Length: 427
Length: 138
Image (cartoon, rainbow over the protein chains, first blue to last red):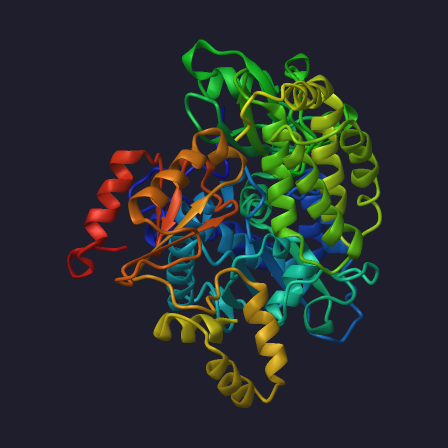
């Protein structure tokens, strides 16, 4: 199978410009800038069926075409490298192992949308990524791949590397824009969409790191080649991050549409200690959890949506049969309660209620009405908030309860037994 | 925010006095600086230890024993999350996903990611950083 985004991973000095140039590096950018019009670039990306790999799966070329070219304001490209979705760690590898692929993608994208300035927002904890990408940007400026009149074409482009400071919500695109503007990361109401009013009030495209790293190969080898690699309406390969109870956790580049079973058993080495799989999160913690009977699902945006989950960020977290699902739900709820930005009441208050409720259940201190109330609380968060975080709380925690209800009920029964056994010392 | 990172790199924390100075420098209200500082987890309003452990507790790490890691660190350092050892050498905090689930259970030790943690590795990290002048890259 042909590797695309990971083609340089593991090579010595893969992050250096010299290494990148040896493999036709920056030739796609040269081709786009000298032989294609911006409209042709957008068209090529549209035809490739490249979709937003940060999690939303929005068609990339279509997103670019929303930038109003008649608007006299400057246009910006923002790269979302705030990778914070639990279970996801792919962008870190691109930053550290192949930053020039990202930079070349940025040049092509900027050309396509008529932007002369790009920001790469990298989560603050990724110190090595920040250093590597900054070093790559410096190299690219020196070699005139960035700066004024790049590659002798008269096209100017500046790239700024910007560190985040530890807030999950800044992975939400409008919260990220607020953060870039120096504010706390509160998501904005949409519309207006960033393509019209984005960074500093100007038209802005926000794309994930992996998405942009796919752009140079598409320009080099053509949209048809890329589209064929994946499945219907979902072109190319994808980086799947596998973690949790598997023998070989890591990042695997595989075609869109590979089954979940293949990823877990053939690539990530299966479940350790001969145990059985009990549950799996297919696309980051926000994605509804799947059960063993759903393992043959194809891993692409549309197939996962069809079975009521989502492909999200490609973060696969595997749980074996020793996992207490009430505990797992509590861990997820704790994450959401901790990371809710606090802007909308249903999410700020609701995520805390959900966490406290599930925690009570886990510790055997809950009564029947606590479990009965849980779906109500959960359902009143989703759809009632500015950003998709609220929906994530609902979908994620809600799926643990609906799919493993008997385990939740068992916790209540054990409460009754404990409270009836008066002689028993409960610590 | 890059400015706040610079200040914290130098001073180790962002104090109320620093917030005032920054607000004056940037010609913005102090409350604006404070709301940014208090919103983001990476900005410290209190002093942390010379060696700061940020231990991940989210799902992938939790499945691979993050709770034991947290318990063992508490036991070894004799402090609770958010506290600093009396000699100022260590502090630790519990954080949500650091984007390194393949290394689970893991933590960030100052600037570096440390993965596949077990008691032995934690002991090593603690003894290595008990003499900060000798520790490298952490």
